[in-house]
Image (cartoon, rainbow, N blue to C red; front, top):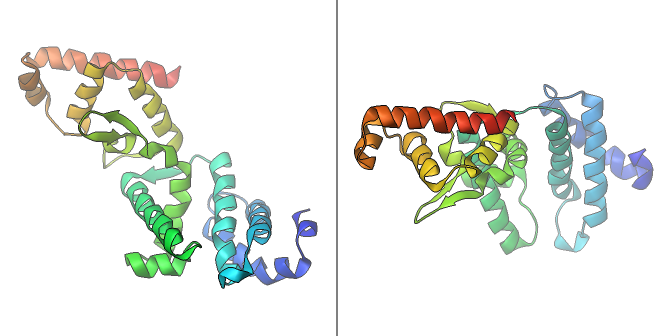
Length: 223
């Protein structure tokens, strides 16, 4: 269906590129479904391509194809993502933005890999995942020190992106005092005793407060 929208030779010349990206994500979805999503990306790339930029079309099209494939995966799967991978994705996107400002086009995966000294496969994986969780970098608390949802996600946990977004909503319903408590316990890694000393209360009070706040968040997340 998509093939009729762009010249057949463009599809033929870039078919292997689309399939190469699809096979890197075969554990998420059916290859044929991913290929159809990749064709949508190829179509968008063809519509927006500017030959005057002196960029090879396949290089230009890569990000469009990858974007559509990861969008399809995002809408059809519950992707697991680690905090380290999210931070890597953020770093890569910051580099892409700076590169675009200077060059007028986006860098290739190879450019990113060489500049940041990261394996190309790792670059692709990070870009896949960060598309899903872009909003998680938004500041949820700003009081002298900006704090994002990623900051209050334990390093050793691997949460689904949907759960993390639910967690963000749950944090937003807390009072300032309750959010400060969560930050101290799970971002600043303070023990209950240390929090108690900071607040001038006993540890029993802190323990009860923690149970109450976590229950409040849980109720919001399962509502």
